[in-house]
Image (cartoon, rainbow, N blue to C red; front, side):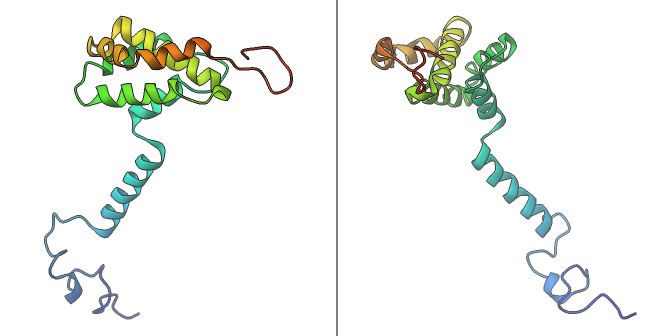
Length: 151
């Protein structure tokens, strides 16, 4: 067979098109860059590991979050960068639609756990959201099939 090294074959180290940007050995390859872009897109679509844990803790599934998971999320409130992620995602779930009453309930459960076991900053944050929390006193959900309140 013929040689695989042609002027248009970018995989060939002697190819003239390899000069310039990709000439240095430590420069990421196209595959590395594609993997990085794919990973960033996946994080944007599904969230970071921390955001996934919050989503799981406040899911619409008929069981609650484990005490281990709640404790782990409360621990994240002590981290300067994780604190706003935990709190904003928790508030987002607390303010979900009434049809997602489990998500709201689990968000409140997470808030309670964070207030008791997390950073003191969370207490100030809860005070700032007191009006929104009070509006939940009138929260009602009735099943669409004529079932009773709740679930």
